[in-house]
Amino acid sequence: MKTFVILASLLLAGCATTGGISPGALNVITEIEQGVQTACGFAPDTATIQAILSTFGSGGVVAGQVINMICTAVRPAANSKLRMARLPTVRGVRIHGHFIN
Image: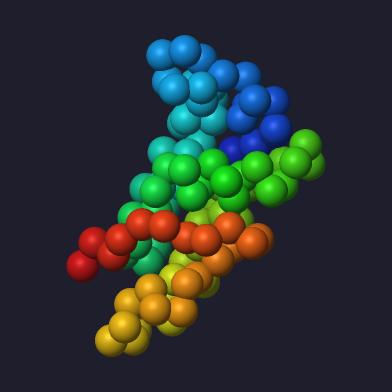
């Protein structure tokens, strides 16, 4: 999997055709969405990924880190009968989405 370093400027450089998300950031968000689905069978909402990325500030983050963080947060819920009952979070951001299996 390719890794992308996300800078805050990617998130802040909006584009009218993509709802305020720059094309570069949109590519990374898509990579994270697909990576989480493949790694742990969970489909996070785009807004959740954006919110997590915004917590990193200008230091940037590698997409693989975010994929691992989300999967770690939702994995225990995947094994329970009460999925999402414990309200998983990453860096203080509530994870919204659904399991695909």
